[in-house]
Image (cartoon, rainbow, N blue to C red; front, side):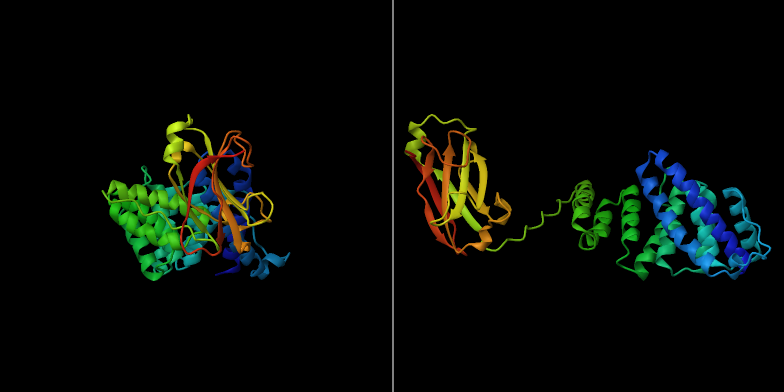
Length: 339
């Protein structure tokens, strides 16, 4: 690439970034906002590379005219590419700049030039496919865009954006089962905060295809997790007048230690019988964990005050001492009145 073209590209990018910073906060479309920020970041990197790599940019005597507006910068870049049409990176950068300026049809055409020159670059293929969708009045991925996305996945099966966009394209075409299949590998690639929303999208596609939703992921068990089953004594239930919303506490505390729970779950009488698992996630205090104990005392209580600390008149089970880790569930029956 010639120094003039390099410097023109840098100028275009720098102007673009200034414009983007000023107008992006006014945008209301969050998806476009994310796209704009991503483009700005990528263009910033290109600009720095171009400036550092261009001796003319450091030479005060160099006869290089800086573009004064974004349109001037784009025209200069287009002029240089007309003279040097085999520059794939130049076409790619032009596509990014035009797309960020919402000149989507021109952006699509610029990316098409870049793909023709570099047809095996998965990132470029995804950018070009996205440009085609943005240029469509209904924001749909056409057959050419879908082919680009499939080619990107063929080159790089773990390409997240390629899989995401291909799934969107498949849903647009009513191919819901195929979309779910395309998206499902992403669950192993994204972070935990993204998995929940992605799983919801996959399940929506599966249901639309007449399939069952994905099973919920198993929660990893913490050390010393304790399964507890709680029932109400039948005779007590017949004699006592208990409200269905009465509070039921299931408590594990240090055997022979203070009465404060190391694990506690709160339920209602209407939830009985219960079959639950107490673990570190049920600890009311981060410094006292069930996993740190060897011996615990487990009790279930119907509280008259709504407080986990026992009081006169509460209905309780007999406490059961358990050595951890336990190899079987603890069965508790609430049947006595606390004095």
